[in-house]
Length: 244
Image (tube, rainbow, N blue to C red; front, side, top):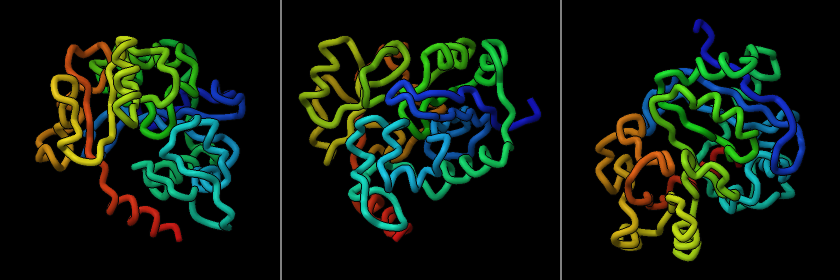
């Protein structure tokens, strides 16, 4: 493929019915994940920063607690936003390119399948995979080597997607349903022994690998314990300062 990014879905959000777009980026230099196919789920009518600030990111984030709450500011993003994705970079740039008409459409199963063929695929590099119809993800991952994915919504694809948990109660609820979880914890000692392991790509684990090599966050396609990562407040504060 000569193009580096493709529109794989442009239609109503399954969360609130408003227009969204999903764009698959074939190559990535993300230091943590490695060179995976990245997928960006964006509000199709407003830029990601404005969407965050005004609450219009619900179309692609649902009720995720890390998206923060709408603010009354004229700039910047949502109040108390703790999502690790810096909207100033990839999401904002990809949205602008989308509005310029820079991305061709991958139409149909075979075209979408070809994007992920024999590759590692990350569902929802930004945005919740549950906003996009399942058949899109099934096509994209049908020939993939492996998948990494997370949702804060009702997990309809636990075979591929990790359930994001924000506390022990949510984690145990997901485990009772047979789902694997990815949980943000306050410190290493908060891991639940016998149930969770520390993300091998995290600083606390020595950043000894990338997602492209680890492959643990693929839902029930991986027979392993659930995964947890330590939150970093300082990095979150710095991200928020960038848009003041």
